[in-house]
Length: 133
View: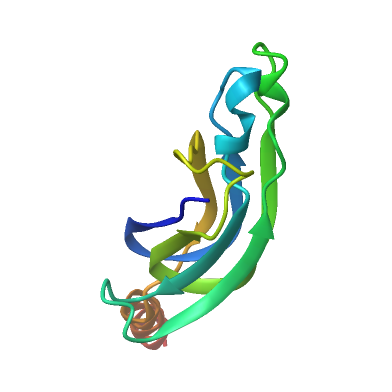
């Protein structure tokens, strides 16, 4: 079983809630290459000096391997976290000793409001209220 690590830089800090994984499309004889066990960690810094566990999951074999037209998604609920970086560690595949494959990955995120923007909005609102008096 081959393992590996992928680090995703989301570009800015988000509230990360869900993960979607599509297994790679393969012929039936190489199904065992599909990713099986994964762990996710999140962090605000790329070195992961401080990180939070976001979940451990097993990804089922894709239906697309036997039915190439169907490409099903596997949806996972993560431990809610706020981060910019996500580290996905593949802990196992479905049995291959030659390679491990993964199709696509997507994260469900929400923008995290900047505290300074909210504070500026509050100060502006207070100034308008004071001006009216």
